[in-house]
Image 1 (cartoon, one colour):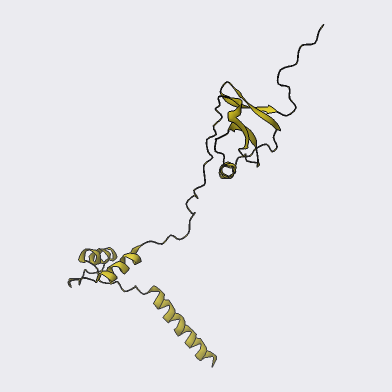
Image 2 (cartoon, rainbow, N blue to C red):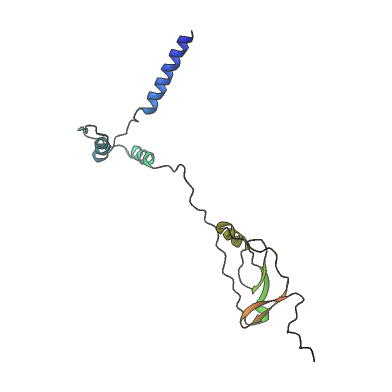
Length: 167
């Protein structure tokens, strides 16, 4: 009984192996396409005239010829680029405090009131390049337009340098 099972298992294995290595039947193709693989394989070229395949069969043949991507790294994901900040101003009213973001998270800064900001894009760029930022930030009490650029007014900082001490 064991010998019979072994014989059946070997026969099954031989059939499965033969099915895996057997060449796939090729659908009818143009004479140039059918002769090229035969010449490459060292087989004699067919002299029988090729029949024209219907449109559906040709479309199916084209789908079979397409290469399917298997393995290897995926193409890079398109991540958003950080927006360019507008720090220009004419008056103090043009400036406001907005979160512009950094690699650590939130980062407030003085920018033009209509300037676009995208903290998520800044963090995505940091992750993509492997950059790090110092975490934390100075508190900003307000903004001021100085020489056409929005500048921060640090919290509890004097607006003018202190007067020199008398001698």
